[in-house]
Image 1 (cartoon, helix red, strand yellow):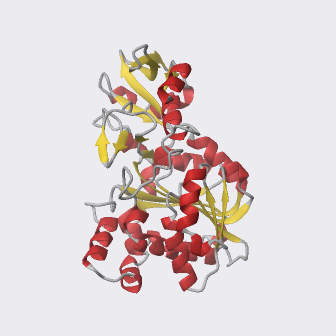
Image 2 (spheres, helix red, strand yellow; image 1 turned 180 degrees about the vertical axis):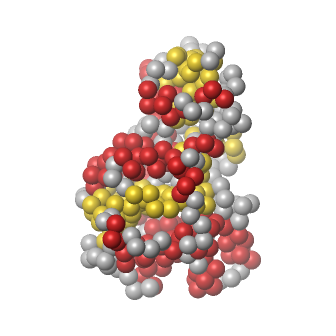
Length: 367
C-alpha cells in the first residue's frame, strides 16, 4: 500500500521520500510506533541507563538557577521516544526537591500511548502537544536527544563539476530508481561552496533545510531559556570533508545497519548526521547565543556522572558497562555531541555552564 502512495507522488525528491517514509501519518516508520531499544532497530542513551537522564538533570537544575528559579519553569522535549529520558530526569529532580513541569511534543498517538504508560508516575507533571506550533510560550529548557538526525535531508551528488539533487521514481515493476536533476537551490550552494571544489566525481552528501523552520518556530515560543541538543554529527568542515565521499546517510532495520534507504520503505529508519555548524548559524539567526559544544562523554563527566552512578545505580556489572558506554569512545562518548544555546540577557550568563567546565569546543563551529 505504501508503495502505491509513493507511486502516486513519483517522481519525488529524496527529501520528500525520506519525509514520507518516516512521517507518513499511517504508513511512516514512526506512525507504526517504531522506537529505539532492545525491541527496536537501534538504541539511544536513555535506553542504556537512567544515569544519563539523572546526570543531564544536574545541568537543567543549574539552568533553572540561572533563570532565577522562576515558578513557570518548563522542560520541553521533542523526540522523546519511550519517555525514558523524561522519566529519569523527573525522578532525579523530584528526589532533589524540585517540582518541574514537563511538556512533550509528540505528533503520533501510537507513540504518545507508550509514553503515557512509561510516565504514569508523573502524569500530573506532564502535558503533550502534537507539534511545536501548538506549544505555548514558555521559559525554561528545550531538550532533544537524537532528534535532528531524523529530519528529512536533500541528497546531493557531484557530477561533471556540477551539483545535482537525487530524485526517485517508482517504476511499473514497483522498483525504486534514482535519477539526478541539476540543483539550483542557493541555500544549499552557499553551504557547500567552500568544500565542493575538493570533492571527487560522484561525491554524495546531504543538506538539511527542514531544521530552519523548527528553529524559527522555537524562537517564537521560547521567551527565555536554553536549548540542549544531543546528537551524532560533525562540525561542517568535517561533515563535508573530501574523504567523506558517501555522505552520512544511515539506515536501520531490526538492529542492523543497511546501506539501502529504499529497503522496505516505512519499515526502515533513515537518518543522517547533524551539521552542528548549521545549528549554530540558525541559533544566531533566530536570536540564540551559542554557549557550548563538546562531546557527550566530556559533558557527562563534567556534570559528575560518576557521583550520579554511586548515588542512584545498583553498581552491578551491567551498570558499570552502561556507564562506560555513555562516556567512552567505544560507545556514545565521542560519537555524540552536546550543543547548548540560550535566549538570555548577557548579565545572566556570568559563568560557564558546568557541563562545559572540562571542555568547550564551540570554536569548531566557527571554522
